[in-house]
Image (tube, rainbow, N blue to C red; front, side, top):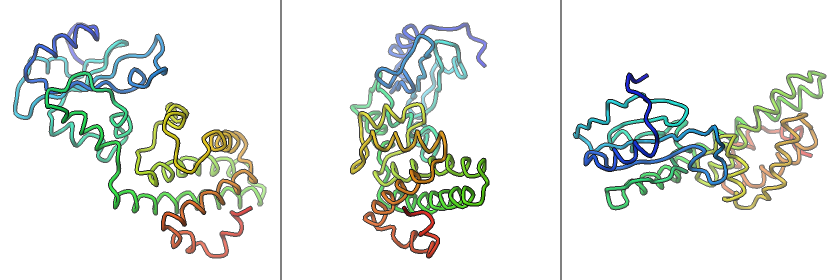
Length: 244
């Protein structure tokens, strides 16, 4: 934690704008997602400094209050942030507050928002196998009377499925908090958002097996169309348990 006294968001923005070492400011989190901020939402702000430059604003490193949470880093560090990592989605949907590099800050965010083709293909293979594994375990546990295990595996399957579907669209998976926000504004191609969210709600609540099977069948079609049939074929006869 910083020893500095708390500073208001608008006051800090003014300080940063007057500092030539600052080449970018990026707001992330609820304040960067239209309609998601509440009276308790703070401002999560990335402060990007030119490589090799020094700034008096580094005295605010680690500053975190109920109003303002600061992350101060160099341009090179900002390019690498979330690549890979849990911050990727937050930055992909970040809001540019200041860009002194003729659009370079915005382009860095755009690059984080788009997985490259090889990364997406390999990632989809892994997430698909993990999804199938959890669906299989959930349905098998339900069959064998292991109700708690079945629900836990069903919940795990949802996480793997979301990773898979967003990876197939070459996008980082949103945090659960922003899932409905993301799908409402940027639907997954070929998926009915209402149907998908309803299935996820039902499965997460009860582990409903018929719903899991219907969702798996839809996902299998999508995955095979995307070229991932070999992953599914490796499951052999076990696929019958997962299908309707």
